[in-house]
Length: 351
Image 1 (spheres, rainbow, N blue to C red):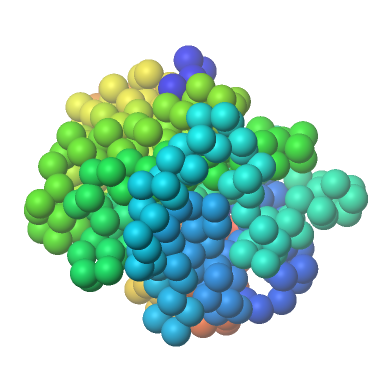
Image 2 (tube, rainbow, N blue to C red):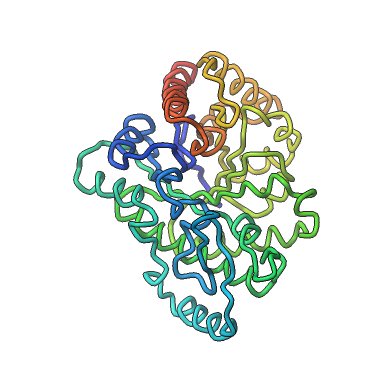
């Protein structure tokens, strides 16, 4: 974790998925809406290849894409050991380019970077990317018997390392923009920790997250976030050691703020909070900037009440949608992004 947190001051970024189809228009809108920290969009309704797990599967061993079900499975093969050996040869040789994400799988990434390179837009000091987290990824991949590979130690470790080196490739591409890279590990499945994942232990979750986090820290200058859009054991997420923690602040504020000691310690050690304050799954269209701001202010002041300086907290806070917007209608997603942009302006007045 950096000794000095970046000066975010309640600026905004996005999570990743969008319901739109037009790549270039969407990227332009992102620059207009969240210029401080633009993010590359995942067009989940455009292609199954942009599903949050499939999108990061290129180059990983033993995987096959089921296009009809938009899922990944372990292919029927008698070459498991040979394929794993080949994977690790490339991994330990730091053959990063072998694990690139192609334009076919992530056109938003390429378009966003091209706009910056061409000087067509003026944006702030950061650029954000994202990757599926290792828990969510391995929980969703099934072996030939239909069992999640989350419970296969050999395969789950290989996939976590594969996601780590793929994330490194992405971070290096983002850094070519001249901006400071930020990457979030998206872990929606951790909202089920303790119930759906009762068979996975806390220490195993932390170890898998640390495989990715530690690898990135050792090989790149990057800020690393963890995004979880539901309730979870947040002390476990803090223990994994991200620089930024992103939570659904609109629907799950009270649960998150139960972890007062961990939050105070995290901020004191240089960590930052990304407040997912604009609703997505429960977006009604009746939300107002004043209502959302009041919800945000409630959380900020509760943390202030624990002895955290409000100016310090503002410098270590980002604003985001509660989750990805891929399941929203295009109109609703546009409204949500507009709310986020206007909320930033209101926070400037408040700050």
